[in-house]
Image 1 (cartoon, rainbow, N blue to C red):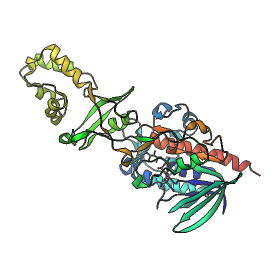
Image 2 (spheres, protein in one colour):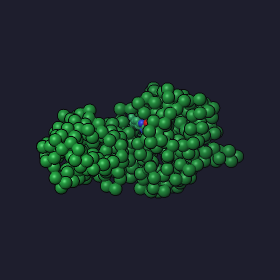
Image 3 (cartoon, rainbow, N blue to C red):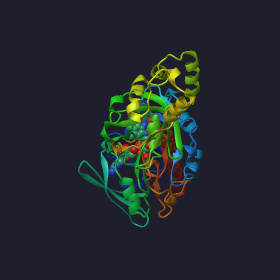
Image 4 (cartoon, helix red, strand yellow):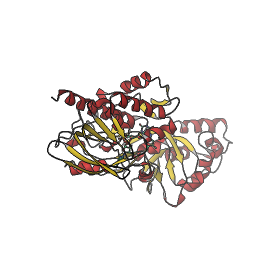
Length: 399
Ligand SMILES: Cc1cc2nc3c(=O)[nH]c(=O)nc-3n(C[C@H](O)[C@H](O)[C@H](O)COP(=O)(O)OP(=O)(O)OC[C@H]3O[C@@H](n4cnc5c(N)ncnc54)[C@H](O)[C@@H]3O)c2cc1C
């Protein structure tokens, strides 16, 4: 069978690309349905983009690489598509857009777009052999024991990263990239909860509060959640992408920076109040009860017993809690994979490999990783559209 374009992976990026390619397109996936991560994302409502998407929201060895694609297929383009399909949406927080109804609406929309473009979708299909004959890619595909050879002028790697193997994530894109001479940078789990040894926070499991979390130079003001195994919540997921193994993270329990003034004022007004009672107006009571054992801080006595120096020391400690995670939950629960196919070998305009014309890489397989909040899907849409449009132009030009 001969096609113009073979796309490996019917996830977010692959489906967007297939919808834009033109010519004869075949998209394959080993899963039983396309877009499974879209379906489960955002608690079933898919945080499909972010109003404030900008290149600064992405991590990559080359922070400039994502600019071109993000600039040519923007959040507004995707919102326009969603509106064309009359999918109702709302902004939850921080520019994060979710479906009102179901993430399945986004999958159905992309399937319709692929059908409109005339792309064929083969599910339960995997790649068993691949070579380049000097002109075309020659792939042997396997579906339910049967093998078929497919010849394609263009090959798009869209099988994503390693996150959540249970959902079908594999390193296929990395293997194919290496086969054709591209470099793959080290990968690690991103947007992932931290673990701490010996159930350090087990007694606090379920407690959540707003914090400022910092790892290296990155900091995020969002919620933190204590879990049986460690720390999670958006603040922790965000800084996990910036965290280096063995390094401490800093948790500021007073992100507004108002606690010291508040305690001083209360001391003047109600000095006989217990310090812990007053703190419980600002922090969860279970956390306050655990703080002496967790931090070595003494919270004994009334407000009136606390000198200015003591209150300053206390607030300083609460705003600079240094914690060293034992590790992370890893690819088992990570939302994304950091690192991947080195962007140095890929055109930022077309996503085409410099060393082998006709080979394209899109989505999470590339060394481009977004923050939590709809940025990763926006990268999938933008990079998929960049490759799809480039292929379309090429296919239309071909004799
Ligand atoms: C639980 C969870 C929730 C998330 N929520 C959000 C969110 O709300 N907003 C957001 O922006 N991002 C979210 N993300 C991240 C987002 O899902 C990914 O960044 C995005 O899906 C990447 O798109 P992709 O097309 O590159 O890869 P994927 O969407 O992962 O698609 C890859 C496809 O390739 C297929 N595949 C893999 N290996 C093979 C193989 N060997 N043979 C054949 N097929 C193969 C897979 O089955 C899959 O269909 C979430 C991720 C997870 C895990």
